[in-house]
Image (cartoon, rainbow, N blue to C red; front, side, top):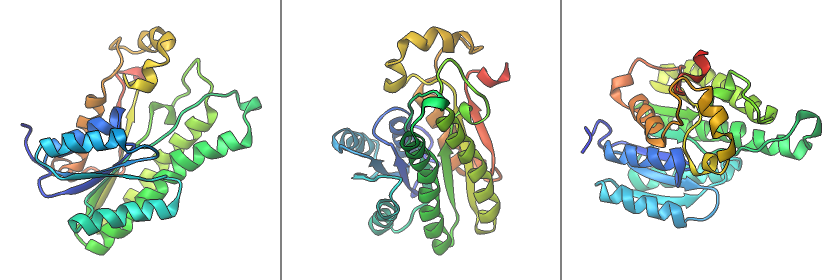
Length: 253
């Protein structure tokens, strides 16, 4: 059993039923936190994660939340506070990805990417931040971004995704400065190529991605979750407004 550095803390994780979100929910629970698992659609996988959370000795529940819908997001935060009395950790992990050449991209495709991957992070941060300010006991917000916030990757064409993630990084820094006086820390984790189910479906690109990664492999969701737990813990008490890159050295080249 890991050290319970988050004992008594209450968290939500958006996109928490699979991949990085699932690994993060379980890592938070193992560290002692209660966890709300928020998902966009079916609760089946989310409820399975809840059962795993409870086996680790923490409390948990799942709900449906469209992070691009302000009412859904406020409901997620309100439900979490009503159940446990506070919200201490917000992990904004939900996101979508698709590819299209810029010259061919419909406005609707661009807008949906911005709505989910950037506006969704703002709405979740805003709702969590309001609750944390009202509580008066500080808190932690961790936004899951991407190496695509700072570099253009290839061969996939995804200007909308890159723009949204770049916005997440700047939003993170701005909120960190604005909310420092409330002892609310806001940080970003930027993964490289991680071995999730989504990435597994693009197996034909794996040699290209791993070939450009100095460590010559995909990352594991748990390796991102461990960084998130650190940032949420007292061990990172003087860390805010920062971007933590976990990419096997990809952006160092």
